[in-house]
Length: 591
Image (cartoon, rainbow, N blue to C red):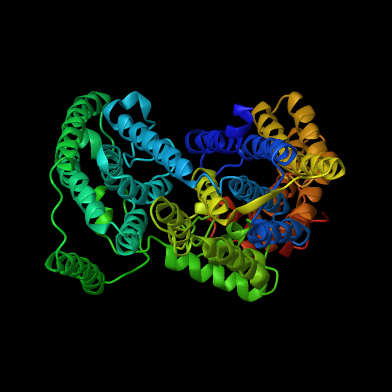
């Protein structure tokens, strides 16, 4: 009985922990088992606890998931649209799990603070012990473990800081200290700005702002020293360093981190200042001065869209790092498909069509509302905004730990204006779980046996929608790795049997069949018919026809390729197009 009582809290927190540490970045390989786990817990809770109140707040999010699934029928990349619909379904499931936590928000706040503290410790430990961190071939040193990308790791810091300021005392101070250091080492401008905004909102809204501000100061002072030391150590904050330098400077940084934690703990024990009118005015003046300084800095330095390097100097840059360009591309895509968009998850093809250089390559416009506008049209954006409003409303006028929780979803939405947070289950799962917990209401209503059977059937269908594309992509990847063996054929056919929308297995079958031109030609034609707006399928089919003596067929594929991706490198397609065109213009080819 005790296990059943604790299930609504422990099971969702376990799933969030798995998402934080094993979410796998922007890929979709974790969606199946996270969504499957959420479905299983939901069924158990329905059977043992009943239906919670507050489900109406999730209806817009459910409608959004349904609209994205419907977009598969007109999508230019239907396989990708299926993945995006599944992703939204998983976030809906996490929000639904949160409904059962409406009466246990304090325990949720404490547990989430502990999980985010563990993430910060793991991330910083990777700087101390280099074997914990994958620097990658270029040796990029921006902090990103365990989430997979620095910007999303920084967003978790924005989630954690209000919780730290609510908690205060030693635990809250150390949580704030570790995340201030981690935020700086991500070099994420959007994450740092988001963190500043939510901390400012918490201090403005809390009834204990002086105590919380004292905790922030106690954490920030030693954190600034640790950050300064980190930027003085090339093995911690410089790219392309040797393993010896990483170890030497990492151990030094680790010692400084520990000393800073001791100093933060000591500062936290100092007496709090007496609350006076002068102190309140001073805090307000400091906040206004900071905002004015930031605005003046941006105004004087100006903005742009140029590339920004991955070094620490990016923190002071005001360039959008191509975001202005991607937003304009997304708008141009929307102008051609205003009502329904191009299909969920398809911005990549819009980027290829409207980019001005082959170096410009993006799969998302780095702005979630704009992404929904261009991919799901006006309807998709409206549903997204309704879902956000429905989940934000229950967080209004909260105090204490619920105020800290209520700032999680706003932080997520603010940061999503400049990044790809919807693609990361590591930040989306906790945000939607917390939003669901604040939206939940009593009473619970028991469900009938018939309703339980119906819910189990719906859950089975939902799990199938998660499982099939996961299996298809897994077998398709294995088929590509098995080329040119005949095992690739069996794996590709197996992938097609579970996910007929995937185009990669068809391409694999075409590769394997190139010694049988008629069969390979049929596979290439099928791939093009599946995704006629995808320049990659057109290019592969055109190259095959050109290599096999059919320039007329090649020209028919390569001409639309040049229209859909006009800025691709010449050796990637333009040269083949001109060669096919010149051969056709001679009037000699019959094929």
